[in-house]
Length: 483
Image (cartoon, rainbow, N blue to C red; front, side, top):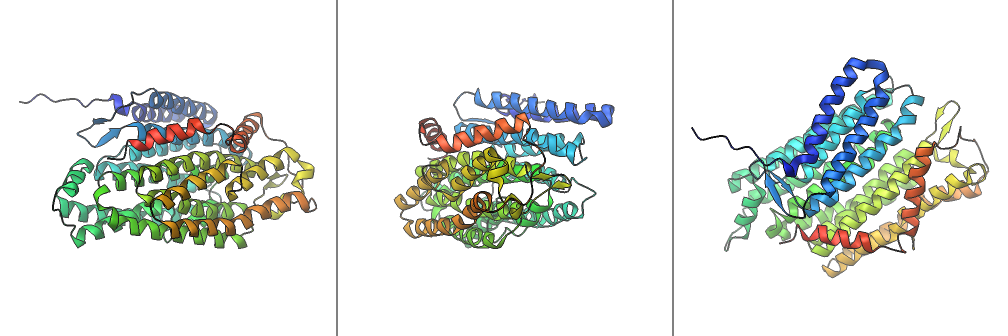
């Protein structure tokens, strides 16, 4: 008998930490029951922190394990770091909300842990099978999180819509994967890359259909148009900290997976997949800019905002160059700071009778809570892309990469969409600073929430002073996916 060979577990150490922590905390929570929520949340934050240290301390090298199905490299380090930071912040942001809404249960941080584990697996997928396993682990956890408020019809409806449409997208992804496997005879990204780069290889029509179906499945996960229909309802119905989590971590992970798929196995088929991504980008930017104008609910507005921002991010992907990928990573890092800060401000919209989600309730906020209004205004101006805030530079590097890749019309559409989208961001600033106060929110921010919003606002406002660390790190990360 041939002795069994154990895989090298070091590249997957952060994932193992999260998996073991999730199981241990689940057992702890079952035995402690009602009073376990706070301890389990603290344990989840510690586990994510340990995983983050593990990710950042890994050697800058490309390591394969689990039969070549799992890869760890500089690109994975950068994107996993962002996912873990956003997941930790989402758990911290959830504490006060869950207590106030009386839905504090120990299962919640465990689901966040498992969703994060799925995201890390997605980023390190080097095979169509490991891609699907990571994607589904993330998705199943997110379905439950969306419907976590079981006594709320809106939350239950959000979870059900997300589940049904998510199942459809998973079917499309699997169908596309089966077509790709049928035409290549392999599910390995490395083997596919070698096949497509071989001299004289002609791309079958069926393979292009397979790529289109895979792109459709991934487009659903990033809520790109026309696979966006779940986003506004789920963002509105899910608990606000869950919405904050949805808006950042899964987007980063899915876009990182999208980048790995098109830049590694399908790099030689650039002409085929570029057209798909250009369409997704244009449709997302236009719909995100126009549909948000009529929204009165702040969470629905942020849903359409996220759709528009995915469109901008996809410009970097469509460029198909190292500069485009660098622009994408810079954009995601800035997007993380802007959105986390915005959702902390939204979580502060609490009246005596409960949470408020109407934009009109922000009227006169500059008079009643000037510090909160100032932070909110910084994030709105940055999301609109107004210089010299960080959001402007995120779009600048994306559009610059598109121009250098001869995608000038795409960059022009992005600029026009950004100008249109600025209207609804500036409308919120106008409501806060020029309208008469309607309602006063319940209490000032908790210390941890105040710290998060202060740091996020500082990063957003002061990025222009010293952007070098992010630019250099993003460039190094991008270089790992390019041939």
